[in-house]
Image (cartoon, rainbow, N blue to C red; front, side):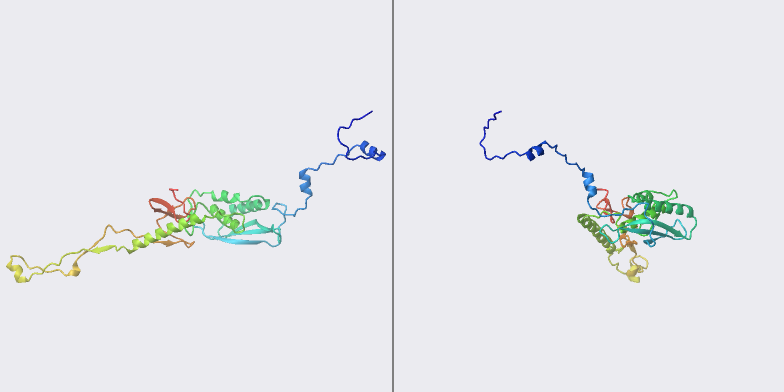
Length: 296
């Protein structure tokens, strides 16, 4: 059998029996490895996550908060203990592990014990436990809420417990409070300065003024009788009555709240930060605490 070669020959080799045996052998397909299997075989650090199988250590770190509410006679002390996971590594973080509430008042003993046991069980379960804050802060007392120090409105005692849990979670880095931008901080500082300047200006206004009158000439007894009139007694200048200025602006005192911020007593409630800091500025209600304005 003749084979015609149309291309130029650049080299050649003699086909040996070993080459024929190699070509006759069937090729072995390479074993395919999935991506999930390859990632599972990579060395990874053993990061311990919070779950209910973690045993309680002998020592836990925590914080105790005090609640003095007009709804109960005695103060309540809330203790939240945290467990430290992955201690000494870059993945170290604290998670709430248990909660206790102690008080001399036995009025709410049953539901307080039930609430603390349920919350501790949720903490040990793991996962996202921040939903407890929103659920507790949404509880309202049918008898009405109260104002805590600083003018912050609390709709119920359970809501204040939720606020304490939120504060604790913020301190351990589980909840991050969104900070205002530099532009918003500058606007809020300008609004507060304008309100303080207006309050100082109202303080400088005097509440009463003196009536300006021309001096009344005094007549002697003989001159008065000679003109047919009776005796005139000249009133001293100090007897001139003082007329209060009815158009004077009302001066409003500024009270300092528990947080160190000064808000007027007549300020209304801000529904965004629950602080009595809403005042009317430039014809619009503006919050001096968080900067919220109904005019946008």
